[in-house]
Every structure is written in C-alpha cells, then in structure tokens.
Image (cartoon, rainbow, N blue to C red; front, side, top):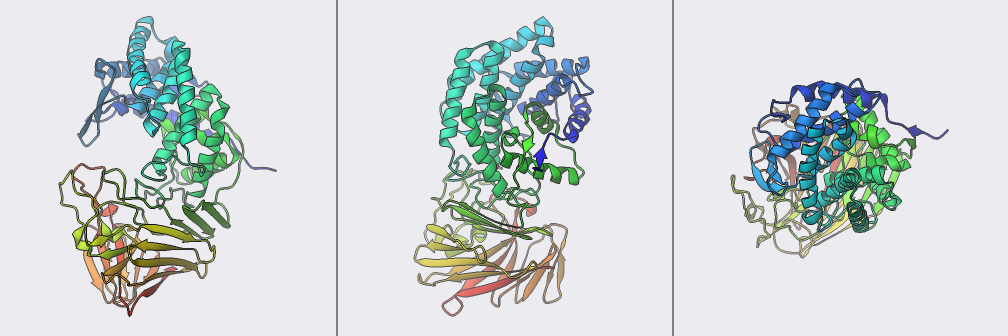
Length: 551
C-alpha cells in the first residue's frame, strides 16, 4: 500500500496552543510582541484568523480572537505612511527605510479574507481603507521584477483581488507568477547570488503554494514539484537544510518548516512527512503560523521518499552540485562559482564540501561567509590580507592582490564510492576526495599542484558544539567556548562524537569567525565560527589524507 501524508492532528493542537500566548502579547494599542515593536509582529493576525475560522479549533468564532485581530489591523493602519508603507525596523533597533512589508501585508490581507464579514461595519471600513492603500501601492510599485519579495506580494495581491473584486489584480498576479515560474532553475530553485538560497527558496515556494491554493492556477504546479524535489534532495537526515550550495546563509541546525507549497506533489509530501516527523519526535509544537498555513492550504496524498530517507541515493544537480547518500553518511559537493559579490548579502563561494553522519550530525562544511579566508577549502597567497575591522559597516570585500580565496572553476567527480571536487585557483589545481571506508570511517584527501610560487593552504572547516569538550592527542582537553586557541603538533582531535586525524605540520584554529552580514557592523559570535584544520602545502607535501571516525 502506498504511503500517504495528511495534515497531522498535532497541527491543530499546535495552532490552538499558540493562541493564548499571541493574545497575551497584545498591547492596548493593538501591537503584538515584544519591544521594540516591528511591523512583522503583526504577522500573528493570520494564525488568529485561521483559528477563528476553523470549525475544529477551540477558538472557532471567538469574540476575543476577533477583537484582537481587528485591533491588530488598527495598529498597522496607524503605522502606514501616506502611500501605505511602514518602517522596516528589526529587533536590534536598526532601521532600513520604508517598505511594503510583504510578510505582514499578505497575512493581514488573508486574515481579512477569513474574518472580514464578521467584523463590525466601522472596522471593515477602516480595514478596507488601509488595505486598499497598501495594495494599490504594491500593485503599482512593488512588483516590477522577479524576486522573493515581489513573489510574496503577488500572492497577497491575488487575495486582495478576491476580497475587493479587482479582476485586473487577479490578472496581474497570474502574469507575475508566470514570470516567477519562468525564472526558476530546472533544478527547482530560484537564482539569487548566482545560485540557490535555501531560505529564500522557501519564500518562493510559499508564495506559489498559497497562490495555487487560492487560485487553482495549474500553471504553477510543475514549479512547486521541482522546488520540492530540490529540497527533498538537499536536506540532511536530521531535517536541516544543506548549506553547501547556498549563496547567502551558512548552516543552521534544525528541521526547516516553511510552506504548504510542498503538499501538492508526492515528493513534496514526502519532504513534509519527514520534516514533521523530526518536529514531533523532538517534542516541539509546530509554530502557530506554520500550522495555520498547512491547515488552511495543505493537501494530503501519496508520498515519495526523500534522499535522506534512503539507504543509498545519488542526485545530480546538473553540473552544479552532487549529493551522495550512503547511509549513515550524507555528503554534498558544490560546483557553484561566481565573482566575489560586492555587497554584504551575497556570500563568497569558498566552501564547497559538507559531510554529515546520522549519529552526530553535520561534521565538516558549514557554508560560506565573507572576509574570512580560513573558511575557504583552499587559499593561494597571504591570508592576512583579508580581515574584517570590527564595527566597519561598509568594508572592502575584495578581491585583494596577493590572495585568491575563491576558485575560478570547480567541477565535481561523479563517483558515489569516492565523490570529489577539482578546483582552479589561478595557476593552482586542487582537489578534495571523500571516500567512505565503512559506516564509521571516511577518508578526506586534499591535494594541490604548488605551481604558483605562492603559499597554498587547505582548510577543513568543522562545526563547533559550544560547551562540549574538544580533546587532543597530547591529552589536553578544553571546553569549547569563547576563548580561542591555536594548536600544532597534534595527531588527532575529538569533538562531539567524532575523531579527525591531523597531518604532521598542520594546525588547529578556534574560533575562525566570519564577518556577519546581517549585522551592520559585521559583529559575530563564537557559535557562528568554525574549528579549522589548516593544511600548509609545499612541493614536498602536496597531498594530505585525513581520517574521519565517528566514535
């Protein structure tokens, strides 16, 4: 019998469980959340409206909930400027100008779709004025090019078209979504920063999925299936997203739960079933907003197993990336390259390999950053030429004469028993080969040519577990924390359930901290760093082989 996925009872339980906290966070002026108030604190109007709407919810047609929703809309209206924009404020008190904030606008609109007819006439009039002001501006100014934010706006505009009976907005939304579909890679992601961005791919999938649930526009279904296939193949066995191909965000642990758009294909429902199992097994509730989306828009049906759920699986993303599942190992090898982005948001594509083991999680990899050459798999030249000055909000991101930290070309070796990558860094040719030797051992071989006359280093980046012990072959043990260290002369290190051999002449550095682009001054914290094994190559030592053992 075919396996199926249906929205679980825990979704409604989680939605209902989240409502008291939402109601308790609302102030007299209608604002939700903690100080400083930001416009997206009002996102909770949507799960409140879904709970009010669903017959199975204990808050079905609750007057208290309806009143909270109405006052939440009033708070948004109070913040609108004369064209409907609100200030983009973040919880760190930074501000980024006026914006039609897409996440709250679509939720405010969709909440109105659910509860509008039950609202008193004066409240409806006030909401009509505020929402029409916003969506007139969104229609005219906010959907000029395909990007994740305009895609979300297009979904909200379709709902506004239904509520306000604006057929021209329906057509505008349909045509824009056709452009979104056309921009998708054949491999299921939307290009930003010269490749996939995991978190933004969820934004596109949510926008198309909710749009499809409202419009039944079948022209978007194939795009949703392609996106589902991408995520089903680029998600680790613990549910966390594969960061190795991501052009913006480094690794973040934990199952990602974002979109009802996965529920419209067997491979997408397989992904949902796997992610939801992780959530339930962790004992955590689903977030109220996520539960509301799945309950209102999700569809059940047959499922297809994900890559992580298989014993053996290989997935080729064209010539751009490879994932190999040999249970209990899961490896990703990326071949995405691009010129160094000059802005803070696009990360340098410098770290191309990740290694995950079912028992201990992600061990090697961690993704990309900026102004941190020790995160690069290889460097050619003087790594001291690239560094971040603390507090500098507009730094020079390179390139720097005398240092190559991002390759000119990368290609993967298509061998599921020994997958690898070959690189070109100027005159240097480098390679990494991963060879699973057993369920608990993997060889990591790094080799270079030493043609350039410049210093060539390899860097094996390791995920830290703060608060846990790191042990050295010398017998020294340290708790991994804020204090840094640099060790040499060790033959192995142990940490977080694994041991890695350390070749003679190499050194271990902690912490190798990135420039964090999400903070204006670039500040970063220890848990955002990496343990790095630095491999100094020379003509006499042009190859190193490290043995990774899971204990």
